[in-house]
Image 1 (cartoon, rainbow, N blue to C red):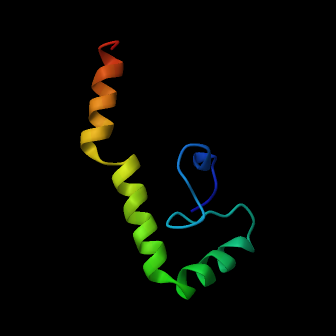
Image 2 (cartoon, one colour):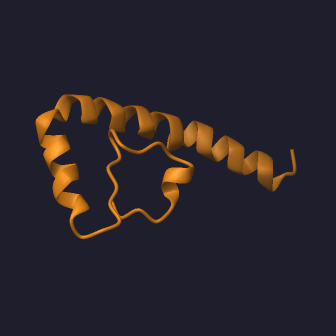
Length: 67
């Protein structure tokens, strides 16, 4: 994914591979292909930690209600 700054909030490097220059996607693809299982596990961990609806929606509701 293009590095738009989300790496400040979500871990990158395994599971979420980022690039900022035209050359970097090739390196990211090579890392992914060299160990797809590791990157799949890391991506799953990121999804569960940062995108799980129970966590995300609970926090959103708490913030909306000023808790």
